Image (cartoon, helix red, strand yellow):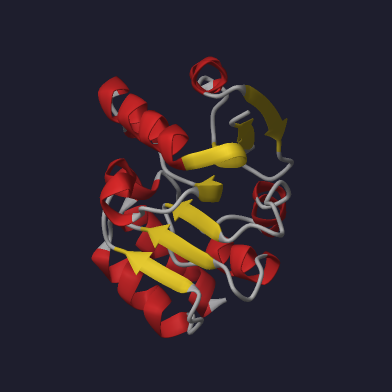
Length: 180
């Protein structure tokens, strides 16, 4: 219980960059990872936070794969480095808009919990365009948001997009997108 309270305080303190007041629910962790290609070699996570979704991705990916996890909050990166000791995890203390600076390989799967609601149109477009450029054909991009107002933008940015509503409170919307 003390750990959950400490996590909630961390998220609330950094609300403008996390877009959340607590860690993601187990339901969201499972649903956002449901479309991952289990045979993929390169995985990317945007908005690692304190590593809940990170752990779920690591559990689902092959032993010879790599997970590049982006997080702008340095203290979150440090906490995850202490908490998760998996050689497949590469933590990058930088924003998603800089993905092409850090990853030169073609990406199989992307999972994001970034707060697009707080981003400018330009930053959102930059991230979505860069993500689509590095994602392989047939690859998946899944995003959790607490609003369905972005569905039109995500549908326009990706070749296919489906939105799933979660039952937790507040209700989350997971956008499952594909590059065909």
